[in-house]
Image (cartoon, rainbow, N blue to C red; front, side, top):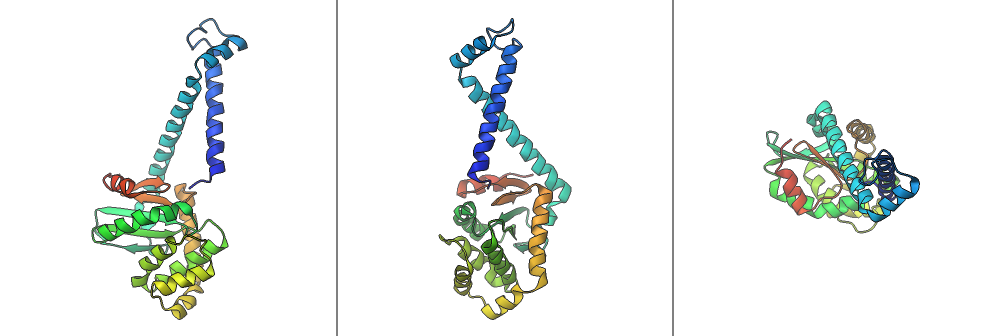
Length: 251
């Protein structure tokens, strides 16, 4: 998920744009009481009398931008193809190959929004692992510890019956996931640590992380978590209700 600074900057930018639009509309006589054009004082007086205009226009602008982003995401997925997100070189893929429903998650183990989504995702997985195709993609963007965590998760795919347990064990952590926490989670998940450490050094592990970043760029994904449910992209955290709503939709 985009950080708070970016969100605030976007909101302020939207508010400024809305004010510029209002000012231009007033100058061109497009607002009530400004039919003959308006002086700066007249426009100011009108805006002070109707401050809700700027907020309403900013809300409308935000809605339009969200819709445009959603369409851009849909176009990107259509161009790339959903199968690219189920490439076993990049993703841990599980569930029936012929399942009609699918869930993709791009995540980072040190992302607070990914962790907030984990309880709902774990519950949804438990309920639907036999009727839904799942793709777990490592997308480390939170620094060196996140890269190490992703390498461990990728190496755990060579012990496939342990991957999901490791994934949710690391996602359930409340403190930063560093090397010590990662190994504790691996023990908890029942992994063979000697094999895990050896597999982490294989070149395909680093290649998988590079490929997941390249796939994310091509799809316009720049934050975690990002979900793609039945072909529809949803950036940001989810809860039980959100996942159920997304799963009910079709692309």
